[in-house]
Amino acid sequence: MPELHEANQWQTMFTPEALKAYGALDRSTIHPGHACVHHSEAQMQCVEDELASPVSWHFETRFVGNMGSFPQAEIVKDGRVEGDTIETERAGRVSVQQVNGLVTSNWSLMEALQRLDGSEVLDFTLLDELDKIKPGQSVRCSGKMDMPFGDALVEVYAYRHVGQGFLPWFYYVDLNGRLLLAINGLRAYILDPNAEAEHEQVMSRFAQRS
Image (cartoon, rainbow, N blue to C red; front, side, top):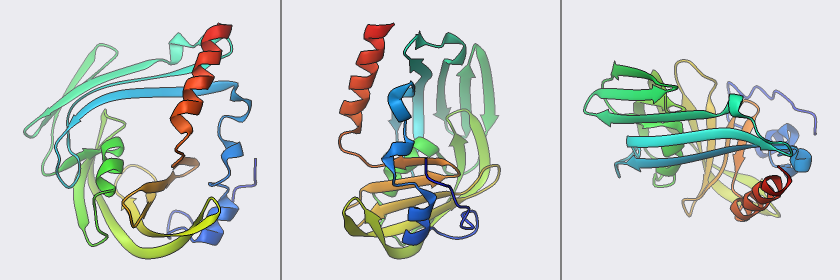
């Protein structure tokens, strides 16, 4: 794994040089050897608004490896939004909370960013990981930049998401509206057209061994 550099990532947008030093574009850091895979799957109904605001969802996540899945690490979440009320359920526990204004989740926000044009400033309440309510959030574009992606230098919009209760997210969307990269702390999501097929192959191999 490449050495990770702080590069003041919490205060400033990543430059191409910082991205390279950070190692975020090195796919070798993802599931080395496929010893264990974190598998998440969700069904979400969202409003087609500026934030892809969630209406209802069912979310499952688990760890799967050579010895099968790990039941103690499995998580199932359900929820819905009705007006200003958010109801979530996890492990049989139901929580009902009131919110004001626009609401989105970290997952649906990724879809919404691909429909923006770089001029919007959005303020909202975040439904983090579909069960934690965090008010006082905002997303804004810091402008365009050239970012190395694969063998090409791609012009992207650079978005920054900041707010209460978590480290900032940085999103990079190309001019065709594709989310290429999202970074939060040591976690990164990278666009890879082959990712779904490769993931299915790995999951199939684990299923045969268990």
